[in-house]
Image (tube, rainbow, N blue to C red):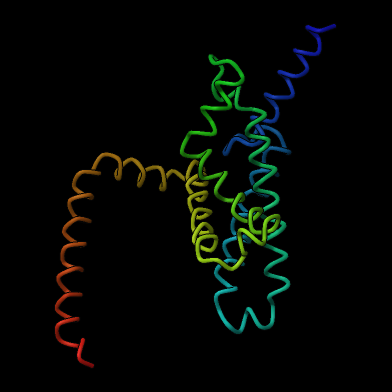
Length: 195
């Protein structure tokens, strides 16, 4: 009886893992979940950007906040499903080790940060006011979830490969650009600070 429960648990865990894994479209529910994930991410980012416009905030604030609440809840459910299926991601590890590895991985941290600050401000408004700049900055972390979509498109995979191969040259370019920006801002300050 115990072996049967373990087998059912492993089968269910494998199905959940296939469902939450991007690009696994062998069953309709997996395709639907991928579509739902992309839709939730796009809607969440749209509402986060749209509410920054005064007109949108004045006329559609309730709708945009509702979209944010629903999509953030979806991100939280997605995170729990990924925790439940972490053993499929790291099959050689014990379940607790697999869960810990997922939580501490880059994608695990991005997934956690994509919903946790929202709930801090909802459940602890006295300590974590919803309007604080810190929580608004954490919304930016949701953009990092877009990197999951790149497994759908070969073109994006090519870009990822080029970036990883040329990362030293790119870092040197970014360093030079930062120096030029600092020099330009110092020049502008010197010229215009009196005004």
